[in-house]
Amino acid sequence: MNVEKKNQLIERIKTLEGLTGEERSNLLDLLRTSYGLVWEDRPEEVEEHLREAMPVLIEDKDKALTDGGPDAPNHVLIEGDNLEALTTLAYAHAGKIDVIYIDPPYNTGNKDFIYNDSFVDSEDGYRHSKWLSFMAKRLRIARKLLSDKGAIFISIDDNEQANLKLLCDEVFGADHFVCNFIWKSRQNKDNRNITGVSIDHEYIFCYQKTVGCRAFIGAERKTDGYQNPDNDPRGPWTSANMAGLATESARPNLHYDLIDPHTGINYGRPQKGWRYDRNTMAKLIAENRIIWPDKPTGRPRKKSFLSEISEVLPGFSSIVGVDVYTRNATVEQNEIFNETRFDFPKPVRLIKELLKQTSSKDSFILDFFAGSGTTLHAVMHLNAEDGGHRQCILVTNNENGICENVTYERNKRVIEGYTKPNGDRVEGLRTNNLRYYRIDFVPRTQSPHDLRHLVELSTDMLCIKEDLYNPAEIDCNGKKIAKRYARRFQKGDHEMIIIYEPKVIPFIVGHIKARDVKHEIKVYVNAPGRYAFDDDFSEVIDKITLCAIPDAILQAYLDVLPKAKDQELPPVNIDEDEIKKALEADSDYSYTDKKGGNL
Image 1 (cartoon, rainbow, N blue to C red):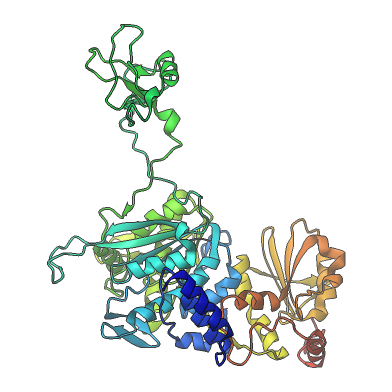
Image 2: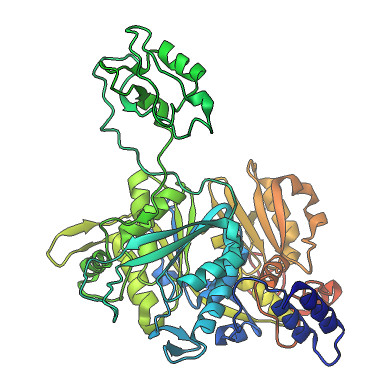
């Protein structure tokens, strides 16, 4: 169909009667797609559930590993479907994640991919559509989580790599593509397909959030070749080629005879000239940077000093994980568990290699297909090597107990230490904390009760968001405010207060006024709409940053949750009078507790 006919058809569809708005939109989208992927969006049970409920995170404190101390990085493990978990992170960590690494199902057709509680096999006619639909929903949220300097890595093999490239071009933008890395994942040549080819490699796609920024540090420069045989005061050097790369017709200024001014030897000119023009070459000669051969048949070279290039690292190779294989990851797992608990894990060294290139010492790292938990293992090793404070978030479901018995247990042993089957003791990486969360839900309704319940259950999400887990008392003139009305968390100069009952705001203000606060306090207030009772905080407004919840949470969820079944989410324009009346009528909210003591 040519462009003119397509435009005519688009205009006809716009005025065609008998179509719903959604049907009209879908038809127009299909016509406007000139290049890329088109697949049938397959519904997921988890997505349908999210039309009725909003996810929140609840900590299992019995599984918390916090012996690393208050200054140790707090790593987070979330048990649950990653679409639900990503929704919560869309509020807690939007724009904060520096590196995402995921190892999703490869959709081999060998029942490695579960969709709506059923394995997808090679006979499923919608096999690829299901996989694309599944991945697209998650990658779109992942993009929102990446920081401006962030990058995402996705492991895949030939079953879906072509589809994944087109999907990522659509989600992240084709110009955000960095590289399709190649990892030689195994050595065994006996496992070949029917054509006789042994497929020994996998791919790792990489996209970056911002076009044009340098995503990779670069490879470590080898300096063995730099010597100083003539005791040059400028330090170690190596000889560099000065032959050019251009024909005389293309770059005539690079084609000239080069003569040693001290001996008069003429070295002529290379076939494609010299790398530098006459003026630059004269400067090099004056700086005594040319190595002159004894004979005119030799080729002059330039001294390249280590001190001048030590800050410029060679490019990072697109071939990754050299001499590290899947079997290495299996050995790592068996050394920790004395058995194999997870098939086809990724090796620590491979993930660490990617993280070392693309993360800083304070980066946030996310893996929402966590599997055996290799990513967190790699993060903790990298922190131990360079003194970093990287924090890792893992997400996985608990099918067959994988989250509790593999992901959590593996990293628990890495933190606390373990003994290999041969009796060797591996000391723990103890300067790390690990917190375990499960997903809970709040109905997607506009009732004041459900909105208040969302605020109450948001505490653990706010702790993750602010990286604050240490509770502190709220003291006002000798009286302490009860936790059901407000809570305070503090670590050094980092502090937040969550107010569940707006009636205690005057006491919170009094508490802040009574303290000689030098740092800014983040204050989350249960408020109708976006107004966080700003006027009531006027006396301390210079010491705080106010945020109204649940509105802030609902706004973040609006971008990622599917359309509700019977209503749109979120109920942002809340009737404030209605909610205030409901709060005043609620017997749970009063200034004193049942014992008549603290607030």
